[in-house]
Image (cartoon, rainbow, N blue to C red):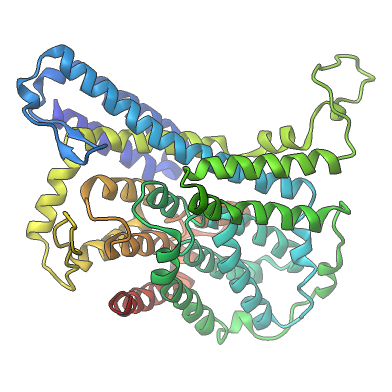
Length: 469
């Protein structure tokens, strides 16, 4: 039965990676794969010789000798545990997405556009690279990419020029998302999973991530595409649609940034702080909104239907629910493999057979074995080909190193920045591909090598910084 579950997972995984060829949204195979895997576990519970308790991160003693009822109780407890951990991530993401949409409702990101006054292509490149790097650390790399490309479309009308900027924004946004606990879904997973803390994440990864952005941007600034001036500088003079744009931008970003502080002070899960931030931002959104609000819906044709939706309702309607469902499916599917001890066994085999190049030795009191840097670097390259979310989810079940171990920080860096090497390798790349209709092979030819250089430089920098701290 275990072999069948692995086959189901592999087939589902392939369907996710080939979503563009199959024309099927990746959330569908993720949900189907999750449901089938857990159904097979329930049906063949008596045939499994061992069970991995994720709460204790240990194999359940004498699982094969337990009775049917005891096994069912253990399975249900494990399922509830994994659902709770997954729900923490999903609720956190829902809150962050809603705040960003509320900011956009008030056209808050137009404030950023107003800061760009230069006509020089190279200066605009550096401005957008730094904006992507720091903005992604606050509102996540996917949202930062959407925001900046939207601004870019109003600054540069020539698409052939604009896609070059989009390529560098992808690299910068993915780099910026790695050193912040709220900058990338995979980093958020490690943070909520109590593998990394905000302070150590910054200390270990800020310099490597910064170099991962700076080196490709520096090289690109000498390319012909970024020489000269833009043809339509007047495009940046458009004013925000709402007089509360700047206030909502600063309030929303401040609310998101306050979440790690809230967690540090209260020791509560991050999603609690995010819900508080969303509530505060929503209060001001309702106050600043000129729209009417009512609990009932008037079917009268002459009624003001716009008046029956608050800014919060509008924002909730615009968030990416397919992405939320995808994360639910893939995280719970990986949890199925983890519960059967498959990931634990795979990690043991990997650590025993992989050449120990640049070995990371465990810290004092750490129960994790040595893991080769080569394993983590291969995860980074793999994240460019397949989705980095299941890769990091698998690593959570494979390795049991202590919180803030350098391994987790290296995984955060590799999975976060490795996806830049292919345009389909990250959520930021996929959304940019859709917004600008960027060709896969154009990106591979012109941008991938820049991303690879940045990835390698950042990885080397990490190997040095981890010896200092």
